[in-house]
Image 1 (cartoon, rainbow, N blue to C red):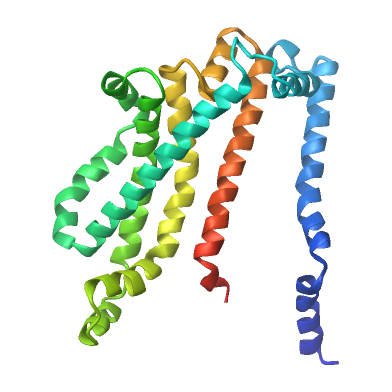
Image 2 (image 1 turned 45 degrees about the vertical axis):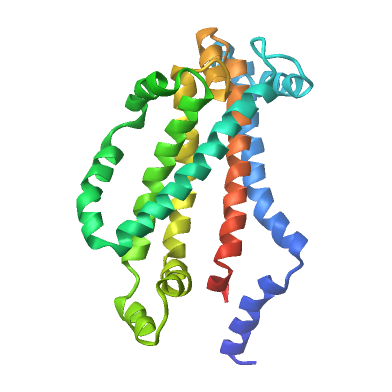
Length: 276
């Protein structure tokens, strides 16, 4: 067997390996690192290297998380109520922000004159720290999930509109012109050429919008909310309760992870042609 053939066999072996072995190989290294870090954290608090009053301990955080799962209230509210408030604001705000970003980004990418007129205003909005807009949103929508959702819409819109604009504006003009010469209508050009070519950039903006959606929701809950995971973390901080703070952070991390998995699943479905 030649060296080239051996190399080809060596490269093909991992692809032919059982799926459970591939899954184990991907999961156990980060899982092992996490267990080690938790062990170091637990030992550090046990031996006084870290103050339990500031950092709590993984065992105490685990007890608080388990108790909240069983229905024990955290500051007079169940964890599920707080998770539902944050999840609602993120899902609704992400949807409307993404739709608005894709539509407006497409229009700007296909109409250079419109882009020249409105792009400076969109860039100015993007440059403003969104947390500075929360008081204005509270005045307009009041204290509650409406202002929180509006902040999420702004955060996601800014990320998606620029990525969509970049993807649409980057479509090769000769492809569009050739389709028009062959008699393709505007709808056909948009659905068969422009949008498919811009999809990688659009999905990149949608991915980047996930953490910004949660940033918008949590910062709004810090400032003007009476429920939600951000409110829960702010309340735990005010009560100097590190165990409750870390428990709320764990719930937030899990919620973000689930949302990211949904976006990745959509991306794999939409961009499946890239793997061919």
